[in-house]
Amino acid sequence: MYTIKKEFHFSSAHQLHGLPETHPCSRLHGHNYILTVYLESETVNNIGFVKDYRELDFIKKYVDDVLDHRNLNDIFPAHNTTVENMSKILFDMFKHKLPELIAIEMSETPKTNCRYESN
Picture 1 (cartoon, rainbow, N blue to C red):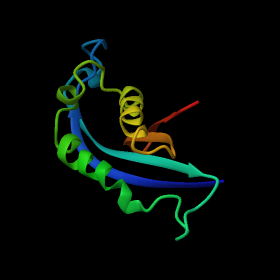
Picture 2 (picture 1 turned 60 degrees about the vertical axis):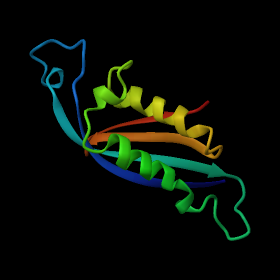
Picture 3 (picture 1 turned 120 degrees about the vertical axis):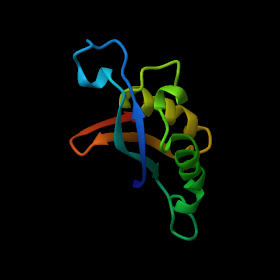
C-alpha cells in the first residue's frame, strides 16, 4: 500500500463559542495552520505516482483564496471552528474529487493536531 501526503500552510483567526469567557480561545485569536492531506492506493500509475501532486493544486487554491488571512468563523458559520470540525468538513469537501483521500490532518500549533479519517 502506498500513502502520500501534502501539506498546505495558512494563517487565520477564529473564536470558539461555548467556552467560558475566561478561556483564551473564547476571544478572537489566530493560528498558523497546517492542513495535511493523505492519499492511499494499492497501485501507482504508469509514471509511478499515487497522484501527481500538481493535481492537488485545487486544494492550494482553496486554502489561499478562502482560508488564508480570514476569520474562519465567517467561512464555517454553521460550525464551531475547532480543528476537529474543520478537518471533517474539508475531508467531505475534497473526497469527491480525490477518491484516494483517506485522511486530513489540521494543526493549529506545533503541539496540537487532529486527524480525520474515513471508515
